[in-house]
Picture (cartoon, one colour):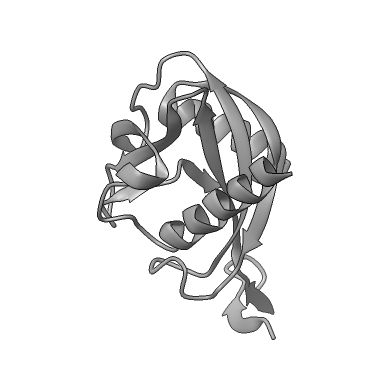
Length: 153
């Protein structure tokens, strides 16, 4: 059930219903051929390692948001290769209730930390850094499991 807040319009004085809904976001697992995946060190609170991503802008598709966020945070041009899953646990982000669709992508170029990223690195399943923020460790576990299953096919 959406949380409804009553507000008074400053222009007309009428009572308005304002709905407080989850915020849509995207995360992008960027694969760098034969090297691993890209993670960023967040510049802003909460600080820690994270999958590149961010909030979807009004009027923007999830796919466009994923490509934009990848470029903004990693300086990489990416080609989306699929959707991993959508994560929606209300406590997944301590700042607010977010719903994130996670994409996989192939990146080209040299990763460089930009925008909200203080640092950047390429990691494998065995070299993941700590701390990993939000529910991103769970997301990465799902990603590496799916990669193993696909290799077995």
